Length: 123
Image (cartoon, rainbow, N blue to C red; front, top):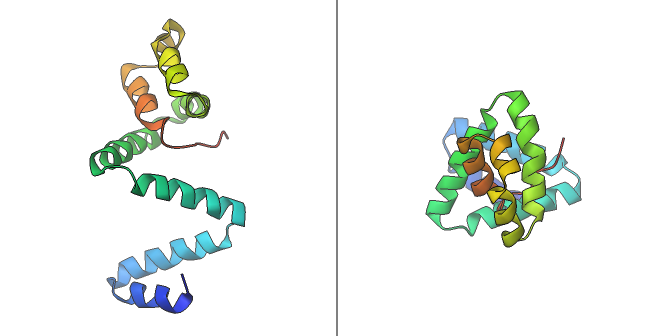
């Protein structure tokens, strides 16, 4: 989007929202092209989901982000693994006793609802 058009859109927002969005856009603009492209792909995927799926995904990601660090460390690699699987492989994995014994019911729900949609980078 051309800078002039961006400014026109920003000017329509309340001042506090303008500040937050300008900062976010500045941070986005500083990213390497590959990372910007990856983030745009995620955003486009999310925008194309039905509203109820967006709400579910948003809720589960918020829950994930509020987990203790040790649980995030346990779930993140599993999310990466599950995301890379086909739907049938993912279903088989989530039905396994090993999977059920590693994660709580709430964590399993989180993994089931997030993994098909969002690629997470392993840290």
